[in-house]
Amino acid sequence: MALSKDDLFRDLRHLGLTEGGLLFVHSSLSALGQVAGGAETVIAALLEVVGLTGTLAMPAMPSGVFHRAESPSTSGAISEAFRTWPHVCRSFHPTHSVCARGVLAEWLTADHLASDTACGPQTPLGRLVERDGLILLLGVDLDRLTLLHAAEEAVDAPYLRERSAQYLDENGQVQTKVLQRFPGLHRDFIGLDRMLRERGALTVGQVGRATCRLIRARAAYDLAVEALRADPGVVLCANPHCADCVKQQGQIRRQRLAMEERFCLTGLLDEVVEGPPRCASEPGEYLAHALNTIAGEGIRGLELGAEWTRAVCEEPQIAADAFAQFDLRVRVVTTIAGPGPGFEYALECASAFGDCAVKLRLPEIGLRTAAEQLAHAAEPCAERGLTLLIENAPNTPADTKKNCQALLRQVGEGPVRLAFNPAHFAHAGERPFIQTFSRGPLKHDLAQLYVTDGTFSGGYTLPGRGHGEVKEVISILRCRGFEGALCLKMGHGRGVEAFRQHAAAFWRLLDTM
Image (cartoon, rainbow, N blue to C red):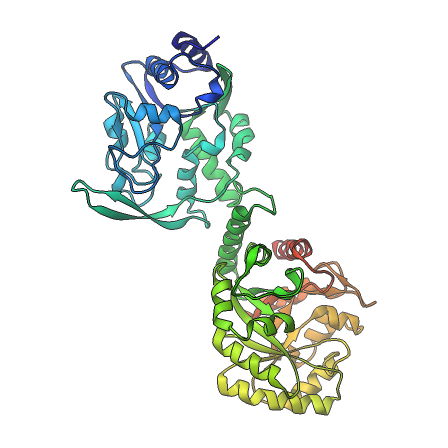
């Protein structure tokens, strides 16, 4: 049997609604079941519940260029029917318009466009909190709770952004409004449901077939602000395939690094991308997924191994533009030492990227030959203002502390610096912090630290799980105001999932320092 207005009125009263006050409703008509008279019957029941001394409000979010009188609501059939109801006021706003009817309607909807943000104190949502109104989720969940945007604005969540929206002014001219701290992308507001219930800000009941939630606006707002201040990522989901939340987690981590650290966090692209490199000017889904994963760990810089350096050196600017879509820029390109076009390509590539170092992969050659090749490579790097990096890699002239020191001493003054890999010193039987770093001059030549751990037996582990003393090296570098790069280089695996595990281990180390 179809629900009548009396049926709805009875259920709404049983849910806890009384006459008077301010009620803000998010709704789904279909969730209620069959309703005689449709959306109009629901609105009539809601208006009867709040009575002549109350105020009923609903979102009326538009799409496209906003026209106050004509832009339909995209917030459901009940909201759209309410928009054209007699004596309803609509706030003038191109993205978060609100409709209201009752004694507080004009006050609630006034001057919305004047606010710099969509949901701040001088908006309908801010006034709803100020008045301690009620919010009814009529057959919808917390993902529709616009009030939580106001809480995100209040804490200035790192993932909020600037957005421009258009509207028609009183003369019919298109104008643009620039909104600050604008919400967007996916968030897991549903995850706050249990907390709000347990803290007494939310009760659950039934209206027709719909499971509904009645929320105290001020209490819910205060609790959401508290939760966001304790953990800026509390409303982001943990799904690694949710590109939106991965991106927003990255923005939180980047803000943390910018506020607390002086080093630059980078990642080695060749290890994260599965399969051979393809043209960076046509990224495709496989590369976009890898880049979003890298950026999601708070990383701003990329190191290109030899494979990816070769893949992008023909069109470095196009590649840079592709990486910039994820707010990433190349910090290191790699080439093999010795004469040949590879080094020249790497030089051109590094110069095009700007503020980029060239890393030389040293082959199995003698110390004197390696010093000669480094000196030869250092000259054009110095002319271009580029840093030349070498890594203490196994089976090279820089495989031990002693050899590294001898090689750098022979090269002398110039742009050559060390990319310190703790795992490789552990492989050589050395204690990377106590022995290699602390005792001797290598720390003065260090421009990059690979966050790579390993064992004396030659294997690789997650950071903090081997003999590389990675935590100790990172800690002392932070004490020294290190402004170089910390590169999340695995050694033990390849691909997105392996990289996530490696990055998670790094963040655990940082959290315990």
